Length: 259
Ligand SMILES: Nc1ncnc2c1ncn2[C@@H]1O[C@H](COP(=O)(O)OP(=O)(O)OP(=O)(O)O)[C@@H](O)[C@H]1O
Image 1: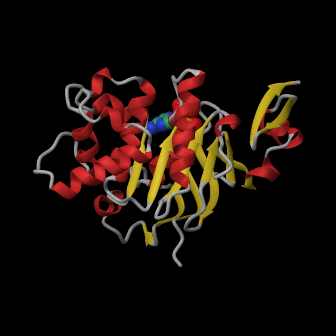
Image 2: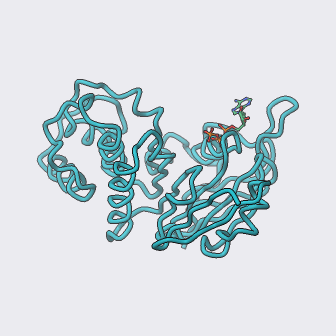
């Protein structure tokens, strides 16, 4: 079975700066991964490589079995749902939630084609799966930050992506909104036919058990990768953060605090 992502020795330089250095990363189908790194560690740069927006200075990139250089990137991107806060700013605020979700089918902002009854049904199912069916007729701009994130995830799933990237989905959410969103993501990962998910974050406690593997990125390098349960310990995380920290487990999630 083809890999979802295979990066071999990927390096990305900008002038004097090496923003990614010799990254090897392999994601197999149905493995959900967390990508953890501090601000400026290179997470967004790495995702830009995976989506074909940046071209590696060195190394090979294969995504969904397609090796970059031999593939139509626009077509490939339709199989990747990248949910990030920069997307939020681009969406039309006055659109109703249902249309924001359905527009994901056309990978466009705003609707340029008439949705079919099946599209409406699918949007309804996805919104129910994310615990927000009540937002159906709401104007997007009146939704809370957490609700907007749920709609954007539903929107990304409208196109049946094979890879879903959740790029810091809990940023800007209060504790309770965050937990509600994480509960929805948890439900989602249990559904059949879910695409492979990459969950990008700065915070270990957002890494749900479904994200059984983690890549730790530091200064553009893959510091460590492997089973989340093995990576998340006080010694490794202290080394990673270059500061003495303690990792505490609570209900299958890991909380890091200063020693
Ligand atoms: N096009 C570019 N040219 C030069 N430097 C860049 C470019 N894009 C990113 N950088 C730099 O590369 C480093 C990594 O940035 P990146 O946005 O990938 O980090 P990040 O892990 O996503 O951070 P955050 O969590 O804050 O979003 C930063 O120091 C950033 O300033």
